[in-house]
Amino acid sequence: MEYVYAALMLHKLEKEVNEANVTSVVKATGAEVNEAQVKALVASLADVNIEDAIKAAPVAVAAAPAADAAGGDAPKEEKKAEPPSEKQEEAAMEGLSSLFG
Image (cartoon, rainbow, N blue to C red):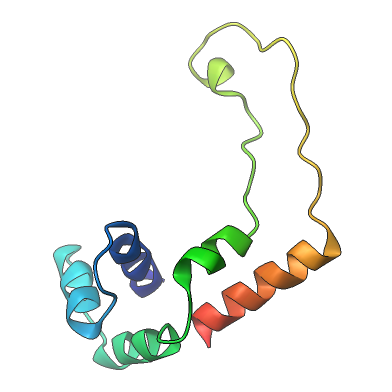
């Protein structure tokens, strides 16, 4: 999982997601690097548009409002998130499956 996080961090920082960069990020965390996993991840991400995969992924909604967590007043009205449609779920799963090969 740390390799996927490294790839996402590199993408967010607009750096190239390649073996050297992923290895550097993982090493910087103090974790041991498995070169085979790095190679497999980089190869599986070669044809993936990471930005599209992120947009297609389902997003978890926090259950507790930030005001409650900070000890503030209760919100006036909570909006409930609508469940994703079947097409959105299928697109998200396709995006995620392409990340993991």
